[in-house]
Structures are given as structure tokens and as C-alpha cells.
Image (cartoon, rainbow, N blue to C red; front, side):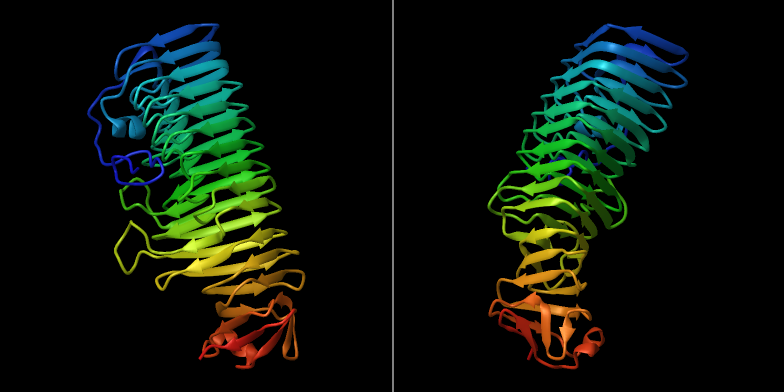
Amino acid sequence: MPDASGAPAGAPGGNSTAQYTPTGLYSLSSGTVSQANADFAATNDDQSAVLVSGTANLTLINATITSSGASKSSDESSFYGLDAGVLAQSGGKVTLTGGAVTTTGNGANGIFAYGTSTITASNVTIKDTGQYAHGAMASGGGTVVLTSVNISTAGANSGAIATDRGGGTITATGGTVTTFGQDSPAIYSTGNISVTGGTLSASGSEAAVIEGANSITLTNSNLSSSKSGKWGVLIYQSMSGDASGTKGTFTMSGGSLAYTASSGPLFYVTNSTGVISLKGVTVTNGGGVLIKAATGSWGTSGSNGGIVVFTADGETLVGDLVSDSSSSISATLKDSTALTGSINSAALTLDASSVWNVTGTSYLTSLSDASGISGITIANIHGNGHTVYYDANLAANSALGGKTYSLNGGGTLTPKA
């Protein structure tokens, strides 16, 4: 279900201005402090267990941090960190080494960095069970650095690694991320989020979301989702004001990307431009549609389609490319990429080493395949008896000369009527 802002997939916030002043069971606003094996147990609503601000620099080693209070405002929690287990704001710095952060209240994020603040955590376990309770979060330009941190969230609208209004930077190395709640992706980006060597899964939503002109970068990581009727990765603009711009970038190299449900696309782009790059990724697509660019629930009808710029480098891909009349897809297959599926409307570029295995009647806006065409035959499009149509009136297809071509394995490439 949508959250308070009407956005999908655990979009962190809605519309709000600060109304509550954060408090901490333990607060530090100046100086440098280091503690080992300390326990901090907050029980009041709107109270963080640990609050660090100003010029303070706090190091906690093997700390046990718990919060059982709830937030009076999910927006205040998502925008500013109200009720977070560990909150760094106004320039405060926190370093967590070992230990655990556990929260049970609604709106109680695990760790939260706001503004010019930074939280660095290594070998920490974060567990949140309430609604709107994200694992590691940044907003207003905050920074979070995670190393071998394990995160789990159980409530609805509780993305595990997330940014919100004003963006932020989260960098994760290693660790396991698991979300169980409805509309709770493993990653929700309104900023810049990168993960190296992590394992991330979501069972109640898409695996990852990019809102606005922001990014997710994955290196040698495993990302998966399994919720039927959703999608693997969503790139969109909700128009809620939580993120500006309309160009989301998803970059993944190595590792694996899996959407295991039987319905829904692997990538869905709507009311935005999605720049998607895959290199050497093992891809599992249970839903049958690889990329869907289409109008959706956000933006102004008639101008809220999706624009996709897709590059596959050394990939084996199965699934269709689907776009509606308000949308477009540009797909480049290179370095021995193989695509098996149909295309209902896309501009396709193939290098000499890549192939398209056609599974149904298809329509191309344009084709760039200089290395694959010889005379009136095309070697690297395997037609399997199907017809592929192209628009001979477009300047981008001038090299095709309005001709009909024979495809490897039967079928033809021919101008549409």
C-alpha cells in the first residue's frame, strides 16, 4: 500500500515541516567521547536512544541500543530522524563498531544521519519491526557508511537502506539486508546509494527504488525480490517533493539480480527517465517482461510515460521490452549479450558479438546493426519464424533502405505498413 505521501514501495515520507524537537536518552552536542559495552534503552515516544549533534564525535564499541517508543509523525521520522535509535544531526558524528540497534516503534528508524552529520557503522546488527521504520537512513544531505552491517526490517513502508527529502549518501560494503513488510524495498534512493559485496532481498515489494534524479550503484552484490504484481526495480518520480529531477540511474556490475515472481517486469520506469546499465550480472526474470516503460499513477496523464536508456554488457537476458505510446526504450546490447524476447517498441543497437532471439512479432523504432547485416540477411537477429517491423520513414533507419531482410533461423525484418 502507498505510504502517507501516496508514493509506493515504502517511499520514506510525505509533506511536512519540522514540528518536534528530537530528544535523546543519551545526548552529546560537543566533545569527543568513546564508550565500550554500553547499554542505551529508550522507552519514550519521539525519543532516540542516542542523539549526537553539533561538534560532538561519539564512538560506541559493542553497544546495545534499543528503542521501544513510537514517533508521532512518520514524516518527521523520515525527513529528520525523529525517534531513530541512533540520530546524528547538525554536524554530529557517530562511529558504531560491533553491537546492535533494535527498534520496535512505528517511525523508529535504526540509524539516521541528517544534514552535515555522518554515521559510520561496522559489524553492527540493525533490526526494526515497526511501520515506517527504516534500517539505515540519511536525509538533508547526511552520510552513512556501512561495513559488514546486517539489517532487517519487518514493518510496512520500511525500506532497509534509504534516503529521503534532501537526499543523502549511503555507502555499504558487505552485509546482508532483508525486508519482509509490504512496500518495503531493500533500497530506496532519493540520493546516492552504493553497495559492494552485499546480499539484499525484499519479499513484500520491489527490490530497489530510485525516485527523481538519483542513483543506485551495485558491485558484486546480490539483489532480489519476490512480490507478485510488483517489479524488480522501480525508477519513477512521485511528484511528492521528496526528490527533484526525473533521471534515475541504476548501475550494476557483477553479482546477481533476480525477480522471482511470475508477474511484473524486472525494470519498471514511469514518469521519469531510467538509465540502466548491467555488466556481467546474472539475471533471473520470472515475470516475462524485462523492461516496461509506461504511464502510471504519478504525474500528469499524457506526459508521464517512461524513457529508458538500457545498456547490457556481457549479459544473458530473457524477457520482453514493452513501452506504451507515451514512452520509449533505447537498448544497446554489446560484448556477447544475448536477449531472448519480443520487442513492442524500442530503438535497438547490436554489436557483432551480440544476438537477439525473437520470440514473437516485434516492432522497432530503429535498428543499428552494421556488423550483423550482409546484403539482405541479418546474422545476429534470430527470427525463429517471426516478423520484426521497423519504421522506414525515420532517418535513423536510412541505412536499411526500406528493404526486407531475412533473419537467421527464419523470419524477416520488414518495413511496417
